[in-house]
Amino acid sequence: MAMTTHEPTEDQRHLVEVLVAGGTPKRTIARAMGIGMNTLRKRYKVELETGLEMANSKVVRRLYRLIEQGSTPATIFWLKTRAGWKEGQTIEVKQNNKASPFDFASLNDEERATLRLPLEKAVRAS
Image 1: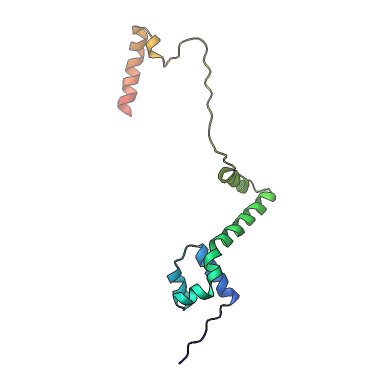
Image 2: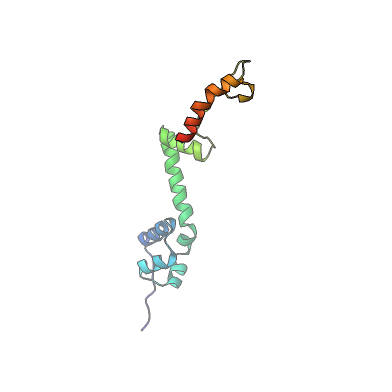
């Protein structure tokens, strides 16, 4: 008895492309399609090779359209992931010519004694 030749439909090709893009193992795809690995490799070669790239290109096109339409979250996402922007807080400390309160070397004994108790208490609490 001769086996029938598997001829993929457009829906089946799309399904394989989506499964590949999602990271589904080829063996699982073949089982889901009801075909063997050889048939999968032979009949769905393009989808197996380009599924991820095709999905990525569709996602990028959609993201770019959202940015063009003024989507702030999409724009922020693009800037952080593609343009190297980072969130952060910059704290600028200005100091006049006086000694910093954290410059313990410049403190006299009385000033050190005044700071020691609260510092020791803070260290014990942490």
